Image (cartoon, rainbow, N blue to C red; front, side):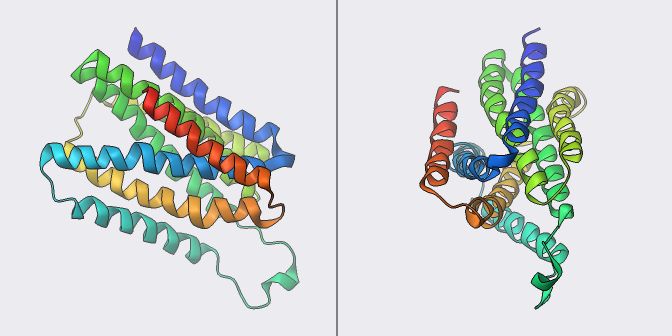
Length: 241
């Protein structure tokens, strides 16, 4: 019953994050600034410590997850630049619209949300206390995922309707992840490589995509303050969990 309740909470948390992003469409630069801070916080206070802990536990060479991090960063860079082929005079033909990048980013976040659900399910299989601790962290993270999904879709000129559909997919993903743990087991060595890869992906979209977009049209002290607030919010969530 506890697992079911926490699974429902991840679904609602993701929807709540996306709803806030949609309702603040006219102040999207503020939302993006906050989102960039959340991403930095997730990398610094959740993913990297988890990688270091697992590497120490399984006595794995830390070079491998760091290679996965670089691959994740470069792979999304290659995907993005492959989709965004800018010609020298492209600005003469109107506003740039690259909705494919938003969809690609949202799908990647949904994939991570699925694995968040896997983490909850495996945690409860080990011990209920471990499962609850993981679930608390994931609920806070899934709120950020919902926010990020909508922000990325809208930033890259997708419609609100399409952003809402991707938000629903992201909300369902951790639920499916929990269900899937009844059918397979993820080894620690595989989890470390996955975490490294996703950390590289997050670093790229946070530093090279979301943060520049937040300051592109309306850079302000409030945007910077919200970025710092996003970092602090994840710090508090991870310390509490």
